Image 1 (cartoon, rainbow, N blue to C red):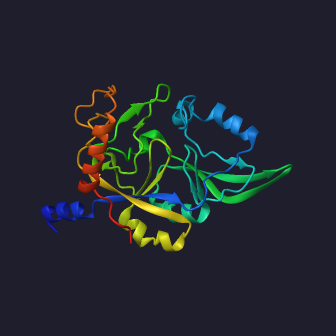
Image 2: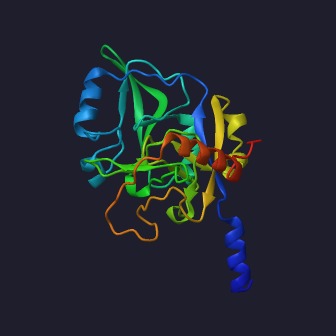
Image 3: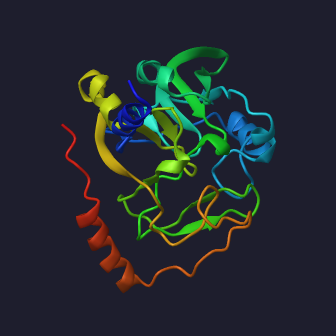
Length: 250
């Protein structure tokens, strides 16, 4: 095959959409208070829900001690909890993440649960919310830059992707799977507890007006914009819904 044909094949094979995995069941779980105190002191950033700078400098798997088993297949709250069978399906495509074991602790009894924690260093995460109505904010301690506008519509800039097909979002650790991979793995059929799979289009250039690492014009310093006014944001949401409308996942 000639170089031109190779280029066309790579372009056609490039991801066009990702799906965000959510759970059908309630997301609540209770961590052992002693373990939670340790996690907040040793792993978590002091000003947000992401892992802190010490963990980023030396990332490692983090085991969790829980008071009760999670009811959901996925819990995204900075420290991602994911059911073992779903993790094993995604793991071959999820390079760079660190997986720790979850344990149920009741008195002196400690037993493993069919759940894992999943943490990805910030440099390997994506920002899945770069659509026109989104707006970015930088945390003061860990420096993580994430979208502060709460809305399900998002978009992923192609230049932030590599050859992986599974990523975590920079903020809450949401799991994003390339749409065709999700279909091939039959995630809905094999993991019926998944509530829905929203589609996130891959775009060539960010539409939010912010300049982040990897964007043209990035100087190494993030300069925040003023948050969009409510009326303007409603108009932009309507536009983005029409222009980048999520496909129905079948």
